[in-house]
Image 1 (cartoon, protein in one colour):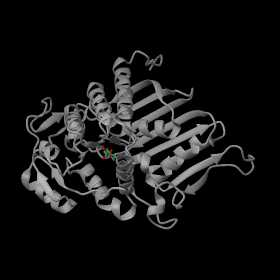
Image 2 (cartoon, helix red, strand yellow; image 1 turned 45 degrees about the vertical axis):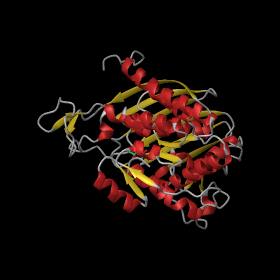
Image 3 (tube, rainbow, N blue to C red; image 1 turned 45 degrees about the horizontal axis):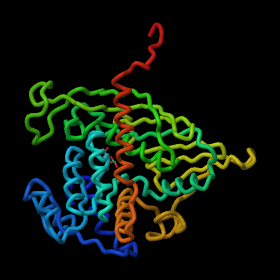
Image 4 (cartoon, rainbow, N blue to C red; image 1 turned 90 degrees about the horizontal axis):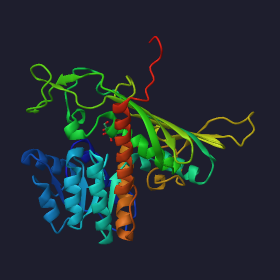
Length: 382
Ligand code: SOE
């Protein structure tokens, strides 16, 4: 694994737990962790359960006892690492978004297709697909229980940078992260909407905004973009992105990705309205899926709460009895479980790098639309 911050910790928890809860055809070994600082990486390897620590990620690719490369770094290094690993015949799981640009994502997807021909598997870590309630929503839509999809209403609401004195961390720097809320959390709702509906976004119209233009430099940041006063730097990414879109099945969709929804901590919300019914999910109540069956008599219909904790629900049978619930970390365990099974079966894991490339193209379309602004119609007298 490369990187040991938030995503590295979540992935380590997944690699540590997956074999204890699922019957796998292959047992993962946590061989080596790569990071930039020798001391910090050694400490992280010890704490997170990795046998060795390396300060050069290329060494992981050279090791014969490493068959999988797990990329948990900021987006500016995804392409270089993934392409090198795939060309060396390693299986690759890469954090989202796939890359910082469409060009990088295209190169990664091409390398993944070439590597697949040689038996090397690859996956993008859009973990919310593996929340049982989200996978259940996908199952019900695929079974036709919603009928024709008319609307998707998706939000991903956070508030961790509402304080203007929150420092200029890498997620707020375009050269590291590629974009702001759009690529970080907007990518999740794009993938989740396409996963649940099985449809594709064919066009978008967008607005983006950066509310806080400069922030204190993060500790240890050197030579950041100027523009701020002493010890301050310019924010080079969006704080919020709102966009509407057309779905390939003819429906309409709306998306809101923001880090300024004061009071909302990690509220990935999606509602799907179909001709036969609707689904609604909120990650802040991640074990619940709300379902309205429009085929019932109006006198008794309405949204009802399904607790997605039955053993018949996706993934849940490996864990606890009904009603005990799962958490954020379980979605990562589920994704490495599916990845290992695909490797063993010689099948293509989902979401693929091509799926990740499709999300990257939607992100780029949103940025083009927001930059263009030509369709934004001002209100007379405003
Ligand atoms: C920050 O917005 C973040 O950590 C995202 O990068 C993750 O993908 C998401 O799961 C939680 O929020």
